[in-house]
Amino acid sequence: MSGEGQSSKANLALVLTGGGARAAYQVGVLVAIKEILGNPKQNPFPIICGTSAGAINAAVLAVDADDFSYGVDKLHHVWSNFRPNLVYRTDPIGAFANSLRWTFSVVFGAFTGSKKISLFDNEPLGKLLQHHLDFTRIDTHIAAGHLRAVSISASGFTSGQNCSFFQAAPDVQGWRRSQRIGVAARLGVDHLMASAAIPFAFPAIKINREFFGDGSMRQMAPVSPALHLGAERVFVVGTAQLLKDVPARMRGETYPSLAQIAGHALSSIFLDTLAADLERLARINATLNLIDPEKLEESGSPLRHVDVCVSCPTQSLESLAPQYVRNLPWPTRFMMRSIGAMRRGGATLASYILFDKEYCQALIKLGYDDTIARRGEIEVFFNAEVCPMPLKLPDNTYNPLRSGAYDAHKATPV
Image 1 (cartoon, rainbow, N blue to C red):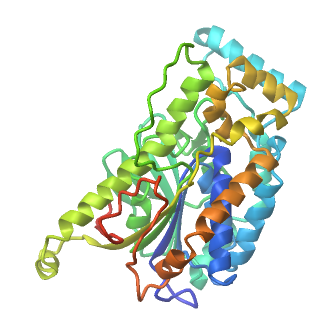
Image 2 (tube, helix red, strand yellow; image 1 turned 90 degrees about the vertical axis):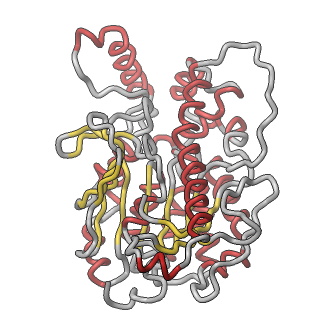
């Protein structure tokens, strides 16, 4: 890596997880980071990794890696003014035509062959990305030293592998692990559309020889791409709470709606893998703390020191969705009501596809407030000379990294 981007921050990575419309929370976190760092022009994250809607946020930051504050402001403007019709067709003709294709496929699929079928037609999102993102800038930023690597993760429907497509400096190599691979590629809109293809909601996208869907599927180690790309310090922004308390079991007399079942499945995809990966990293760290550093170095092991800071919502994002779901266009509301997503039990599903500006603004504010509340800790994390640091999260937040003090992970690319 060369140029002005070469510094002690050259190994710092940003990991943005999936979550559909919930990714607005990430924008609030980024706005707060921009403020805490003094509105920097220089990109503090030379390594940027994104999945699902987080991949779109990652791509914007990568394209504008020569001016971090400008990139964050661009994200803030777009998400603060989001409308459903910027993501999927909401006009009556388009919405119902797509619904008919879905119904026809379900009933007669065995006779009609393979078709591009999904609940929503997300062609508007593709046009939006094509219009606003100049992917040729990524190579320019890598050459100038503003950026070392950017990766976008998607899940292959044929291979079953979670694939991290990455564009990086020449010395960065691909990788292969069980059900996970890293492939060098020239990133484009198709990679973003594939990564953000929420199961059933949006259609799969063909890249090279295979169809790909949402990158959160089968992503058993969300932090892994950053480590493979050379990160030694990682800032992770999730879109769901990591609770330490087991929620109270409630009596359910009504059979779960399709929306409730779908929302539960999506939560498992978008949340459970991050929590499990953080727990695994914490265990690796605890184990390596027992090993003499000199002996570890003599062994030639690839294990290395990785500081990890995690930012996740302090309150449930789906709990905010019911008050905004009626802002959706009536054709979308009709479709959502038919599967039970307009009821409170379907709020989880609604929270993933609720690209409404008022809902997004609420999530942005929450992300900003959560991050500013930890201003002192964030400042220390971005100071490589004093990190590791004490880590304090809200009492209701499960923190697998806590062991009396901030655990600086010693982790291998896993």
